[in-house]
Image (cartoon, rainbow over all chains, first blue to last red; front, side):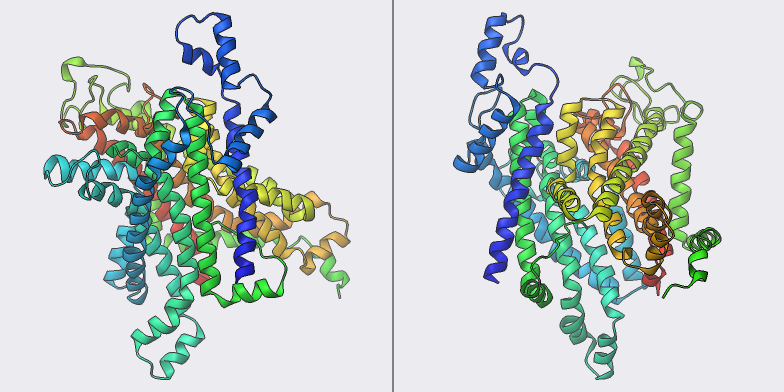
Length: 320
Length: 297
């Protein structure tokens, strides 16, 4: 197991490096001269040149990329904001707990609400409970989270006045953002749980367990759920990426100063290093969560461990 | 052992069987009421997009400041915005952008992904390694963040938005095609095809793609809805298709500040996003069940 963890950690390094290089390279092609935007009206060519030099924009692509990657890898330093000239790293670290709080609460909601709903639906296949929960889940995956957020604000803040629509300052400020962000995830979770439970329920060993006279509940808990768990965990992992990315609009709507709002602000200011670093930071966070999911996989599924012990290579597919 | 018979039969059964397969799937689909509803609604929305100039009661850009911020009424069934523009008309015109961006972005992403998948699966070794590691990297960036990043560089506009959104679909199509090539690579009928000198391109087009067709079709149908939502999200945060072009996401964004007084500005465009995505998802679900009867026992 230790070897497996180490191997997965090492595999993560090229992915993180690759993400950094990819995002940097995409944003390298930003059209227009950012310096002119910074200096405002009619800067002299000398001013422009001095600013470009100071920001390191005159250096070739590879040198700039090298410096950026070196900063992140060796000093965990994402450079400075182009507009405010403040260090991006401290801003990201200060904001990350808020983003992570929302994402983790949403993930818990997704697991604690979505999974039981899916199980209930699968067990009551084609009865009204199944149809109703799948009907709601279908709506859940069909609404964009920013619209759910605004509808929740409309109902709970504007009409009912129960919850604050904006800002931070206590638990109740997190309720609407978390519901809005978690809703699509809960729906996905319920759908995936249902279909993987249905798959398992049809297996021969479930029939055998029934023939032995085992109670339905014990069959569910001892045989069905553990075997249905793997696809369910995958959805949790992938969902975490959606939840983290979903915070971008959610934080913007609810005025929560997390990384998402920082990113949106960076887009508005054309502060490319803020955009770049926020995206990379969130992607790294996502990769680490996927790593934890993978480890959970190996922990739960003896086949993965056995496979690793037997073969020298395991292909990991992150797709849903 | 291959007999002469099985070699000359090589690509004979493909055509008639595919036709009947289509009939079977269509029949199964037509028995699934939610898939039929999804299909009909999606069709209606497509017709609405095509005949937008006829359906929309007002030109989408027509301002009427005397009737600005009007609540829904007989005259303006979904109300007007802050410039007095008819919201229903703007929604009707906006369906053109959402639908075309959704469908084209998925087609583009799937096509590019398939090319990579075919290369990876067919050539294997180093080519496979490089392509798949690149896909790993692409998938490590959550879809909307990737779209945001590309959109920041490309700037606003329909085509640029479409391009930015297409990248997210590449890894899925690539993996599906690659997996199915690896799955059938050692099957006898491919050996047979190779033995009669069928070219690589022919083998991929005639044997590999038809085998991947159904999973690809299902995953693409399901992702159109997702891409439409992402496109709306891009315009909502100020990227993608920009005002004054009527786009559902940017209409919601424009109404956000007026949610206390004019909730219709936010509600109706969102309802149409939901309706569109819901229809496509219902149809996609039905398609999956119809193509894979194993799941529908």
